Each structure stands twice: as C-alpha cells, then as structure tokens.
Image 1 (tube, one colour):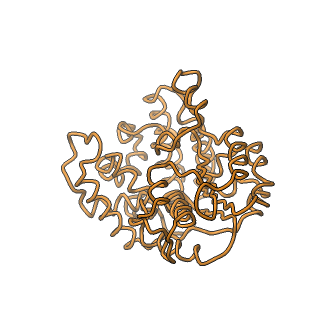
Image 2 (cartoon, helix red, strand yellow; image 1 turned 120 degrees about the horizontal axis):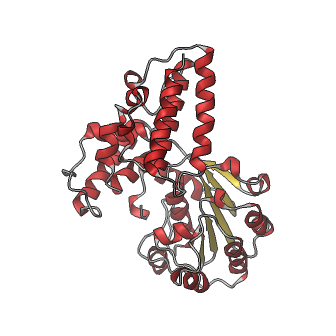
Image 3 (cartoon, rainbow, N blue to C red; image 1 turned 90 degrees about the vertical axis):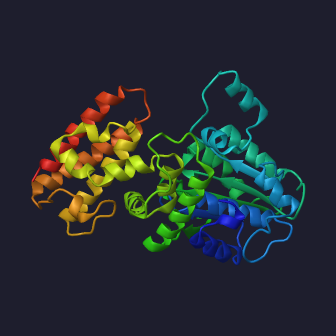
Length: 357
C-alpha cells in the first residue's frame, strides 16, 4: 500500500501519529492490521520535503526515493528473507553471499545488520532534516541484535527517528519496549474491512495477479470475501494475502467445512494446504472450540460450522493439550518433513481432541 492507498483505518492512525512528538515508536498488534504499511507511511512522511498532516506528498524527490527503495536517509532493518521478498536492497557482501549460495537468507534480523543501522545513524544526513530506521518484524531480533540497538534507540544522534513494528510485542526485550512510545494498532470494523478487501480484490483481479490457477474464475464473490475475512479473524491484510497469492478460492471453499471434516478425521480437507497453513487453520479451530466451551463467541468460524462443544473437563484438558502440540508444531512447520504424513498426523490429532467430551 502506497501513501495514497493506505486503508482508511491506517490513514487515521498516521494522522494521529504525525501530530505527536517522539523519536522512537513501537507499533504493535496481531498480524494483518498493517503495521509495516503504517510504519513505512510514517517514515515516508518524516522524510518528505513537503509533508502535510495527512502524510507525505507522494511527488517530491524524497517520496520517489522511498518508492524506488533508494533513499539514503532510510535504513530498513528487516530479515533477509523479507528484504528479498519486498525488494529492499541488501548490503553488497550479503547479496554476494546469497548469490553464490554460500548460505540461505536469514529469517532473523542479524546482529551485523543492526550494527550497520547504528553506523547509519552516525552519518550526516543526505537530504532533508531527519534520518529514519525502520525495524520489522521487531520480534525477529534476537537478544544480541536487540541489545546492539539499545543505546542508540535511547539516545539517537542528531535528528534520527526509529519505528519498530511488531506482530508479537511480548517477544521483545522489556528494555526495547521501554525505550519506545507505544501505539496499539486499531482493529477495523468488519464492514469497513470487508469494503476495503472488496476494493483490493477487484484491483488485484483487474491486474491479473501472478500465475492465476486455471480454476480462478474472476472477481471473488462477496460471500467468499466474508468467509476469508472471518477466517482471518477480521484482519483485512491477512485476508488480502490469500487473494494476492491466488489462494482465495481454495480457502473460501474449504473453510466452512473444515471443522466437521476434522471431527470425521478427513485429511483430504487439508490436502491442498501446506503444513504451515494447516497448523494455522487448526490453531484457529482450537481457539474457537475452546471459546464456545467457555461461553464466548467464536472468532474464525461461524458457530453453526463448529462441532458441538460439550463442557466436560476431559474435553477442556484435551483442547489444552492439543493447543500446546499445535504451538510446538508451528515452530517446525517449514522443516522438510513429509507433508502428506504430517497432514495425516495433524488430522488424526484434531479428531481426537474434537471428539473429547
């Protein structure tokens, strides 16, 4: 999302943040609420040559430099995997190592990158009145990396500003959190999120997307978008991710039938999903069945699609054990296991937990 295409709830937050003072911000909330987009819009506004209370102008030289990922006063502190995915340049040595296959790109924010960010803050500004360091996802910093930033984060030299964005603030060091002004991401209403998702889906369909599967039949029906947004827990960016990866049809068609398919032990319901996707879906199912057992409303599924939720203690213990096992499985979901066997194992375990009364 560029400066002109920020979702309405992000634009409102941007205006609020720009009206406040502070050199270090921590934007926090669950995935799918637009932390990265808001952080980049904030950085763009700080660096803009003609900003307004609404944000960056979008047409000056500084805005263009950010748009093409070449602004000399913007340091993007990202995992190497994310830098490659989003097109942000890596330093020459790292790029050479990756090009020569000496190692795989890191999924963590490496300490060497943090040291380069500290050095970046000490250089004279190339243009404008400030420099910006953007860190995302901040929870990908290990303890050594985070400690490397601490002193600079607390007392940055000159007019340097930091934006840390995270989807797991509880994983950050308390010392990191204490040095930032906190901002909790706003959760859009379902109707507002659905309207935005509809517009983004239509724009994606107009451009053709990338490598559409043959079964894609054009614009996604609003009912399916509602299912996607529900499956994402009301987080529009997560739902849009399925649309942009051309998985919307697959997710929408299977989602409502998934709970009862797991109760039957039907592994075929997960056949087209990766282990990581299957684990994420089962974690949501576990959450909603637990919610119903305690008298709360489900978040990711419709109540009528969920298996009957008895309130016996045995069932509660079974759900607790299942939740813990799914959390452990999520940590190794991207390892090169036999995907088919893993999905069968996940289905078997889901059936056992859901059948417990």
